[in-house]
Length: 136
Image (cartoon, rainbow, N blue to C red; front, side, top):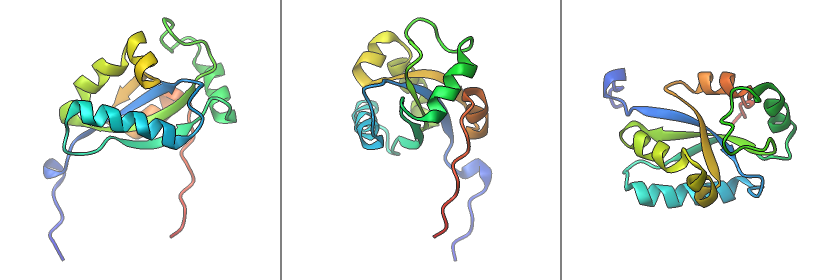
């Protein structure tokens, strides 16, 4: 068995909490946008979609009621879905520049709401539940 890498040698990542356009109904639609961003950023590691709650889900609706003051006011109407995306650390600043404004929202159907090095903090800030773990 191979020796386990120390924490310092493992790949670094950032977690992005994003508001997703109401037109994106399925997880695979958002993954297509992430594939486009992956090609644009030219990074070795893939952008990974961890959690996705479309705009019609109860989780997204309840998150909006609790987040009205903390969400960016320049572009959200209150009917967006939410997602959490894992991004390699070396391209995180470029990724944020692409989805941090109104033009990024119209191109890629997502807008950056929160960023952290810990997924737990993103879930707390967006009031999203931790998904139930499935048994293999």
